[in-house]
Image (cartoon, rainbow, N blue to C red):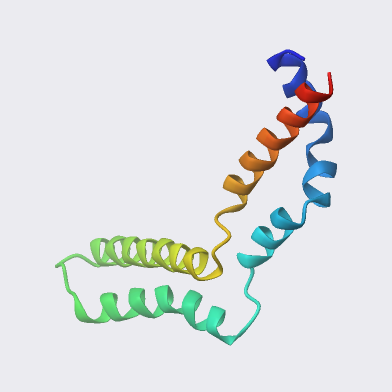
Length: 111
């Protein structure tokens, strides 16, 4: 099976293959808010943005809003990273790449 044939196969069957895989479902579910600690973890960026806006004065209101948005986005990225470390599953994209490689090996060995 050539690379092009496999990519066509993957494009046509990606959703069904991923929906059957338990690891991928778990990885997708880990990025959802499911309990109180998740609410705190994902509420933290909003609090950080508000505290930054109220305590740091950059001289221009628009600059304050932009800086506060940047702080919120950075804090959110850090919280998502912490959540992925806590759950230990990695991102759904990483899991999908592993599944794709496994499927490719399985198909090439069966030929």
